[in-house]
View 1 (cartoon, one colour):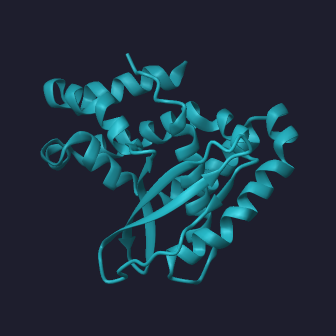
View 2 (view 1 turned 90 degrees about the vertical axis):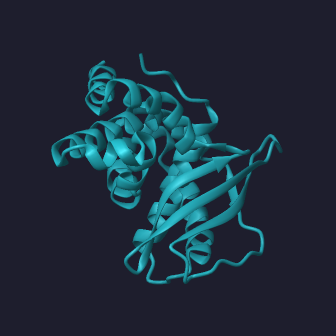
Length: 205
């Protein structure tokens, strides 16, 4: 049985959306600047299309497929979730099917809930990162109308000349570790194919 993740992960998925659009759209190589510049535009786009998306959720799913999927490192996420040993031993077909079903799971689980975060604002405090490193972390705060601000840490991995998101930590809770808690033990004891079948069953509902 696939468990539901905490509601805060919905916010995390939105933030992946924001960062992915930034990385895809900009020519700048500074991910902090990209995230700063795009966050306002993303919020505006979600707010502007809130009623349209509410009446036709497929519009939001189109956005997710267009911006999130190509710019999140699902291979890196799959390696963490399955464990490096299980992932290295899996066939290419198993890896591809796991990633395929995992993408669908993310879209179906979080898609319709994203609109509820359209009135938020993302703020990035002054910070530096080492561009020579393969992995970096970027801190931000999500300013909410309720004044219940949320601390978010992005984790990105270098992919060629750009960066891809592979994890977000929301108030100390990692979305990647959340998925690991759902699947890792099952994969360890019963194999990757069992997790794939569970996701297929969930996604078919």
